[in-house]
Amino acid sequence: MGWFALASLVILPLLNPNGAWAYSSSIDLLGILGDPAAVFQPQKSVTLALLLVASGVIAVRSPLALVLLPTLAWRFFSDNAGYWGPTWQYSAVLMLIAFCAALDGVALVRTSRRRWRRAYGRQAASVSIVAALVLATTLPLFRLTDVPVNFSTERAAAATAALRVVPDGARVESDIGLMNYLVERTDVYWLGNKNPPPTYLVIDLATGGLPAEWTSAQIVAEALHPGVTFTTIYAAGGYEVARSEHASR
Image 1 (cartoon, rainbow, N blue to C red):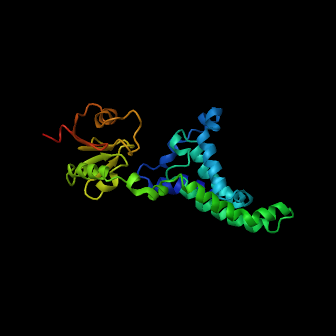
Image 2 (image 1 turned 30 degrees about the vertical axis):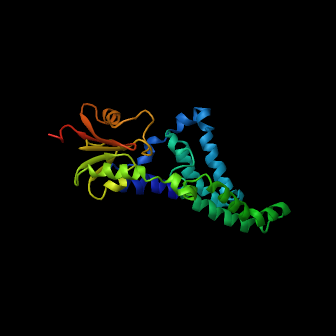
């Protein structure tokens, strides 16, 4: 708990240009505790259940499992529903802790006075392995079993064409879809932050992580930069590129 407080209240604010831990603004402790439906939200239950199953359940026997609590707390007490579920990268930091706790739990139950604990300790690793194999079928990695269906080249061609219309050195605002391909040669801003008006707006309507109501580059531009006129100059395969009217003069 001390290390978590030091990291979130001292170290991370020192590394942040705004002098604050960026995720602290989303924590709504009183709001969540005052809403029973938010406390027992299904996504949170799924996250906990998968964490237990992946660690063979025996992780809870180890005091190392307590190290999971700070990260789970800031996620579950956040007003951002994206932090509640098991998807995205936020569970990655938990897995190392969970597996270390599981190994420690296996070692601890070997000396237990209860026979069933000692017996389960000998099977806990198998439970974790079986769980991993079963859950793997629900993860993106499993899509590699059918490459022609899951990895079509049609959108790849559309993505390449979208990138071509953005010149080197331009100021670009983008979602996560094509951001990685733009950072090497342009000045890129993620549209989830408050940014200055960009010259180009690049969005991926299929997998860019946009809100459902943002169905076009024009709608995104109006939401993020009201009063700034953008013209869509490319649209294909779910990708759209809009250029500010000022840039086209």
